[in-house]
Every structure is written in C-alpha cells, then in structure tokens.
Length: 234
Image: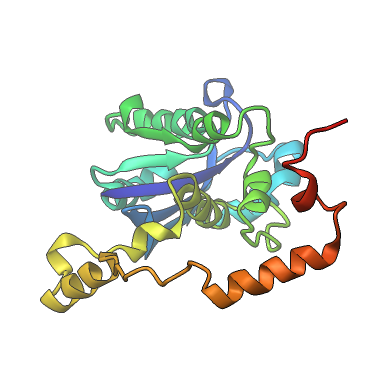
C-alpha cells in the first residue's frame, strides 16, 4: 500500500484570505515503511512574509524569491503523489492549501477521501493527551532534536515515523510476506510453534522421606498445628 506522508509551510492560516504555500515536503511509504523516495520543494509565494509565519519556519520573502512558483512546480508534485493516499498531521489544513493552489493552476483538487489525518488517529488512540508532532515524537521515543524550526521535509520525515508507530510499530516489517516464505522458513515457523510434551516426573514422597517428616513433626512438640489440629478445642 503506497501512501505519501507530507507537510507544508505557509504564510498564514487561510489561502482564501491571501495566504500562500511556501514549502512542500513529501515522504513515500509503502505498508507504513518509508521507501527512501522524497519530494521537497520551496515555493515562491509572490507576496510578503508575515512576522508570525517567519518565526515558525524561518523562510523570508527575500529567501523565497529565488524559488519557482507553484504553477511551475505542481506537475512534479502531482506526478510524485500519483494516486496514493495523502497522510498529514491536521490534514484539513495542509489539504486546504494544496487544493487551493491546485485550483489556481486549473488542476483538479484532491478529494477529502484521499486524506489520512494522523492527528485524528492520535486523538482516538490517546484521548486527553497532547498529540502535537513533538508530543508524539516524545511518546514514541523518536529523535526530533533537529526540529528547531518547522520545516516541511523534516516534519514529514518525523511524521512518517510517528505514522508507523500509530499503525502498530516496526513489528509489521518483521513478518515475512506469504509469497516470500521459503520451505525452510515455513519449516522453522512450524517447529517453533510445536509444543513438546514430556512425561511428568515422579513427585510422590518416598517411604524414607515420610519417616523423616514424621520424626521432624514429632520433634516440634505437641503445641504445633500438626499435633493439635485433630484434638477437640476446650
């Protein structure tokens, strides 16, 4: 199963109020495991950069002027995504920007059914707990020490690891696919699953052990539980 884990950086919160996309980072995963293929692109938003957004991702308008616009890069992005599901943290935000940008260049938008929201998955699994990307990295012991500022590719790479853990962890990759099992693999699995039954060992006391026990109880005296349990109470 092929999916694209992605993240975006923007100039603000709402493309319908003039905010624009400035960075896209994508990580390809198959069966929840990264394949090593990525897509990363800074985008010239053709507008100024609000101070609040700059503090989050550190991309100035001057820096972004040297990159192509979305209309120039979207074919490569669309080609990389293909028909895969799109996985994002708070997916409605990222999908809103991607779809707005696609609509501006005349490309069809991605339907909501294509989106997988890791924030919603985390909220269902850990209700009442912090479920930011940083909080989930901490929960799953994923090293996010290099995340000084938000960056689309770094965040997508971290999210790919989080997504794997949310879906069950790396044990998924330890099982052999049915098509890949050899005869020796199957034989080894069967041998490990078979339980070996052995005859029980003798555990009744011998005559000598009974005599020694009786002598031990006698030596304890008449006030012991063994000596008094059958006598009527006064």
